[in-house]
Length: 455
Image 1 (spheres, rainbow, N blue to C red):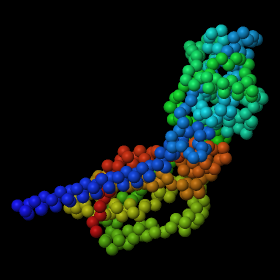
Image 2 (tube, rainbow, N blue to C red; image 1 turned 120 degrees about the horizontal axis):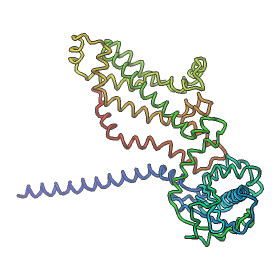
Image 3 (cartoon, rainbow, N blue to C red; image 1 turned 45 degrees about the vertical axis):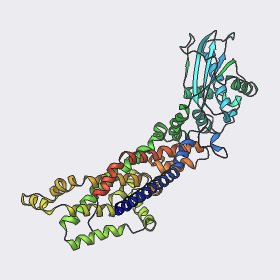
């Protein structure tokens, strides 16, 4: 009886210790997970901040609420020679109001400005612009390297091109839109906006209302304009001017897709020959060649490889980006060989007796059984090469050939690039890797377990 009591006490003691150990392990894991995720969370938060708040010291983790201003400008009682003059006047006031407020009230987190032109109770003109759109036109577009003054904003055809860029609606008979009467912090912004426009950017019409609402989705809308930024920075490149940041995304997908297909096929073929067609001694020597290639530092062969590629004509074109993946990676060859060695020899003997060729053995036996290895190598190739930078930067000068990381590096070196835009593009760049790692985490674990090689 005493022995059973002692046993129970021992079990309770060890059970309590085990629970404490599990609690400590979970706590430590959560702590380290939070520390690892903090840079990503900070990058996402910074990307959603406006152009002024991004430089706050000390920085805040969460972005400020996004303000949306609605300006109502009244043209009742004004005489116009014709419909075209009326529209021209409203377009000038629209540009003055938008750029003036964006420039002078940059600390107020105004992420959207809408302008309504009304006359005799009817809305005749409407235009809307996001803060990032205004900033792009100011930094790289129509008003690049220009002072934000009234004379500059409405000089020549600049204001018409700016309105065309933002998009606007005009109908002398009236639009279906209804001008707002003011809401939220209207009084605060009414005073600020009125003072700014009256002193620096006087309008032809009368500013009657300044409405304000909070729209949190405006912070996310900034990403739309981050993707358009390369088209503003490199307007002379037709491909980038048309597709923007998607140009670099497609280049990365092309390069990595080619890398995945080539490594899966070439490494499997090499491993099949080593495992099933060569003697044990010859196979080990060939495998040693592939494994030895992994030990050569890239810095020692970088210059000779670059010179060789230039002489081959594989420089500043897609060939320079794709050809390096035609060399089977030694570790993947090793994984394939270890897996092929574990396939029962009776499969191959039975097929050989029926007259099957080596290619048939490879295609019909080895590859169907190698799905775990294929998925592992494909995922590892994607994750490993998505962040590749140096070689792509070394062999490409043409902007339309840049991969994501090369483009991100060059955009970051542009003096006009704001930190929130840089953070936004960085988030866009790393998102596919994170999503794939989450979506295929189960397959990745299974692939690693199935790829075990007998010692």
